[in-house]
Image (cartoon, rainbow, N blue to C red):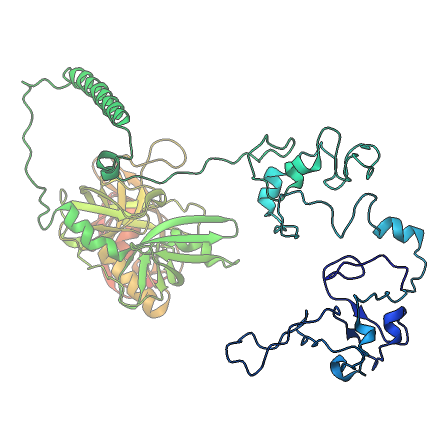
Length: 591
């Protein structure tokens, strides 16, 4: 017999329920081992009590063969001295050896010494028997209930505050002798047993507590809410009736204030217009019949251009009129003269529709202050050319151009005079002109130069050139404007387009204006040797009174009278020499 304590039937050597297993016979000890031969495998030994063997021939017995614990067939009781076959083919066990309960000693275990550090780290705590500590959640199934880790948002909301540094696995202060009989458990804290701590009980319910200090949610600007339609506001029960009533009262109040203000304003306006005042009658619509200023301006403006000259950092503006479908524009010489010197000067023509095109000088005539430039534009609007010889004083005219850079300006007036000899100021250019001008009271200002003067039919009858002003320097219009007659301008323009230059008739004299109180004329100051005047017998001191059919009233009129004629043309000249009238014939030369 072994010195191990008795093991009740049905329990193993360690006191647990189960079957007793025996190691190999060569390592077993005890009386029972002497009579058992082992094949090297564990043998199951049942109690030696006799077992009822069912009669296999008895049809009423359905229990079948009796089986031992663990599923082995029960061994029938044998008579003493009869050998019984062992399980799994083991040697027979004498009947004497199976008499009485078996007593098997466990195989001695060879256990190495345990390191004290490892024991303290991984060993069972004192006072704890079994594999786990006593259950704290009340479950009795022998398992500890686990839970998935909470989401980060819940952990941040329901975790302990940062000020509480105590861990969940150890009490904050020693609780005394842990593991002693009656002492606190390992996780018990002073006044807070672990089995009643909700933070250590996975089965406890969550509840809202105080917010964590220092973790206040950041302030967020309130977002715009959903917009409600009028139907939802009135009938959708989304707004309280009291709020609707308040809104209605506010709207009525605003309307009342507006009505009062309107009434006061209307009452104050009655002082300006009395209800009983008689007002002038007006027509239902404005009429612009053919020949009106609006009609003429609408037809002529597309043929008028603004001319911009740039020379370095300086510039100037003028006007021009398109006279040919090839893009030829007629203007004044003093407008384009600064660009004729080169030095990187540029010329641009701006049409009434805002289109800008570069322009080039075709030719210019300083003696008549006329010039022609060409613009590479397709299908331009061309002005209709009229006749200046048919003009009469009092005829209505329009001056169109860009005064002071204001493009498309239209002014109207009448013809104040015709055949007015005017000597032009050069204005810093090479212009040395005396023109037989059309005088008009239509407003002409700097920038109008080169623009057309049109009659009541819309035909061009002159080129606006100069103004007469009061005082020194440039001034505005005082109703004295001058234009070059289109009959002279057409002849000059055709010569410039054809040849690039113009030849004028020349008498070969210098004269000054004189009068005796009754008769005006041009007195010859000197005669150019070999000139037309010298060949005709004109001498110094003669007073010229008439050239051809034109009466001469002064020196400037003599100049324009001669330039109207062609070179080589014979012309009769009436003069006074020493108080006696005299007529000579001169063949005009060319300049």
